[in-house]
Image (tube, rainbow, N blue to C red; front, top):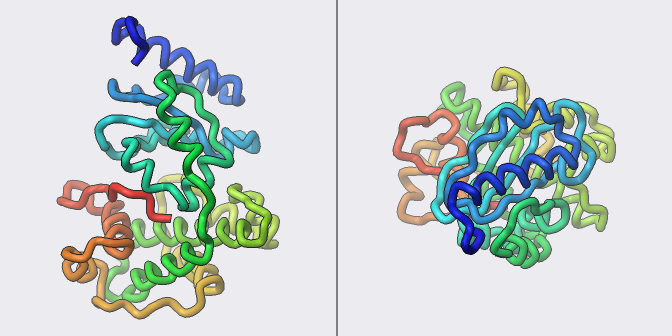
Amino acid sequence: MLAGVPRRRVFDVMRDVVRESLERLGVQPVLLADLPELPADTQGLLVYGSQARGDAVADSDVDLLALVEIPRPSTHAGIFNVSYYTKEQLGTGIGTLFGSHLKRDSRIIWDPGEILGPVVAAMGDVDTTRLLRRAREMSQLFTTPEHDLPKYLPGLLRQARYLLRSCLYAETIARGEPCFSVRELAIRYGDPSLTRLLASRHEGGHASEEDLSQCLTRLEHILGPFRVSRHGSLEATIVNQWEHPGDLLSMAFLVLGVTGQGSDYAEVEKILL
């Protein structure tokens, strides 16, 4: 909050600053009508991804991260994706790929209390060897299709994209040529289909087993043979890992979260990779 300024005025100022900042980044004013209402406990806001790097195209999303006091699920409206993190949640990004991405490419557009800036600045570099090792451990979630498809196809595809994108980014960092652009990855790897396969937004939200297969084939090329599932299915993984929280349980939550609306599964509270 701004000291001495009424609450309503604070959010009027925040809204105006955010809109002006996004327009300067090239977001068309007509699209700003879809900008979601930010919660009352917003302490800071940044933009990351293609809009922050300056390589956005006409249909690129606008990825925003809001620092808040109370955890809440992400929201999506029009071209806007807003992820909400508390200071504690964002702190789990230190040493992760996502944290490195924020430190390198994000642009802070609202931080009146100077809270968000120091958190992002502390993110540090990612340990790519550790990231790939953790990704291989998570790969076992894709090895029981006879039990998990087609029921959990949307979630499996979403997380296969996430792992593949993360591993490809990690490879570029390990080579000393960091890249956080899907379109640039497609060029560097000579694989034009990566642009579509890895896009975070897909028309109609359609998920296909062919896309899943293509993502997993590429992922296996990076990680080697996937680990065999220790539990036999996604649901069994959650039951058996419940008392042993870690990467595997968190990833299983994310897979089921896509199709498990209304269930007891909540979004994970830490940054994985």
